[in-house]
Length: 550
Image 1 (cartoon, rainbow, N blue to C red):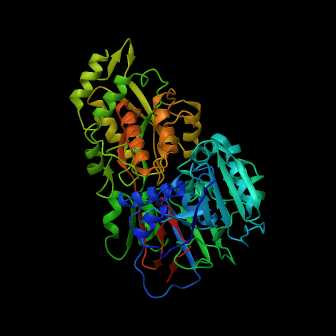
Image 2 (image 1 turned 45 degrees about the vertical axis):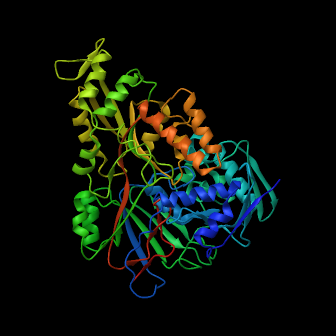
Image 3 (image 1 turned 90 degrees about the vertical axis):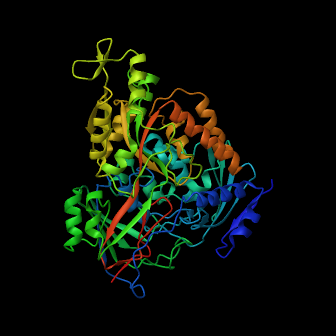
C-alpha cells in the first residue's frame, strides 16, 4: 500500500505545496483546504490591536451570551460550549484559518492511503492529560471508540466518524484510524474540538457527568468550576508545552485565570464591558455595535458551515407537502432580514452553505423573494385563505411551529420578522423558544415542525451530517438520491469532482425546500482596551492560548 506522508513544513511556499500534494489521497485533502482558502473560508484571523510585548499572568473575564449547557466538546456544539471546550482539549491536528491547510498539533505528522480509508498519525511524545494520564495511542483509540458509543449524544462528532472501522495502536505514539469507505473529510475533522481528546478517566464518566464539568483534557487550561447559568472558571495548565503549530508562542498560556460569566441580556452584557465589570463580551448585538466603535476592538469573523435556517421536519403532515415547503421558501425576504434586524456583518443566505465554506455555490436565483409565487403554489395545493388570513385545507389551518434556543440573541427578532413575512401569504408561524438542551431533546423526539439553528464547520461534509439519512436525520428525510450524492462527495478525493457533488447536494436541498436558508452567521465580540492576542480558530471559535491582558 502506497502512503503519502505529511509532516510539519511551515515554511513551504504555496506553489510548492500545490505541486507536492498532487495525486494522492492526502494531497486531495490538502488541495481541498487550499481551495477553501480561495473561497475565503479562512480569511485573516482576527485579533485585537497589539500593544507592546505580551505579558504573562492576570485574569481575563469574558461575558458569554448563553450558558454552555454542556461543557463536553465531544457532545455539544454550541458556540458558548465550544468557546470554553476549545481551551480544555487539544486535537490531533489544527486548521489554518487563513489558508484552510491542516497543520500539526498533537500529531506531528501523518500519512493517508490513496483511498483515504486509513489515516496513520504519529503522536508527539510526552504529552499528558491534566490528571497525569499519558496521551498516547491507546488514549486516541479510546476517544474515537467512546465518540461512537455516545451515539445521538454526540451528533456532530459521531458524524465525523461515519464508516469508522476502528483504530489500531501500532505503538505508543502511532495509531492508524480505518474506515470502511473513503472519508475525505476526516483529516479536517481531527482539527475540530468535537474530536478533541479527553482523559481515559473522563471517558469512563457518564455523558451527564461530563456535560456538567467532570472532564479532563490536555489543553492549555484546566476546568476549575462550572456553575450553570452563572460562570465557568479555568486555570492555566502549568507545564503545558505541546501547543498547536499555529499558536503564536510555545509553552504555557499567558493568562493565569480565564473566567466566563453568563450574561444573556445583550444590553447588560454591553454595559458590563463599558463599565469595566468584564474585559470582553461575546455576541455584540447589531443595535450595540456602534457603542464600541471607539476605544474598543470589535473582533469579527464569518462562520463557515450551514447558515441559520428553518429546517423542516418532513414527517409532519403539513411540511410533508412539497408545495408548502417551497411556498414558505419563496415567501421569505432574506435581504430584509439581514438589513432590518442585523447589520452588514451578516449576509442574507444564498445557499444552505455559508459563502465562506469550501464548495459553496450561489443559489440566490432559486432563493429569490417571490410572495406571489408562494401564494400561487399554495392555491394550487388547495390551501385557501381563511377568515383571519391564515390558509385552510380540509379543515386544517396552515399553522406550523419553529423551535429555537436563544443562543444567538437576535434570533427572536429574526423569527418575528420571518413570522410577519409568512403571514403575508397566509402561513401562521408559531415561535417556541426552548433551552438549548430542550431543543435537542425535542428534535430527537420529532415533536416540532421547523427547527432553527446553524452548524459551523469549515468543510462541506457538514451537509452529510445534516441531510444524510444514515446520520441522525432529524429532518426525517427518506433515503434516496441525496444520500448517494452526499456519500459521493465524502468519498471523492479529487477536489473538483468532490465540489461538483457538493454543489449538486446544495441544489437538491434547495429545490426540495428541505430547509429555508435565512442568513449567514458571523461572530462579533467586543474587547476592552486591556485585552490582546485573542484570535479565532478555523471554525470561528475563540482561542485563548496567546491572549494576554495589560
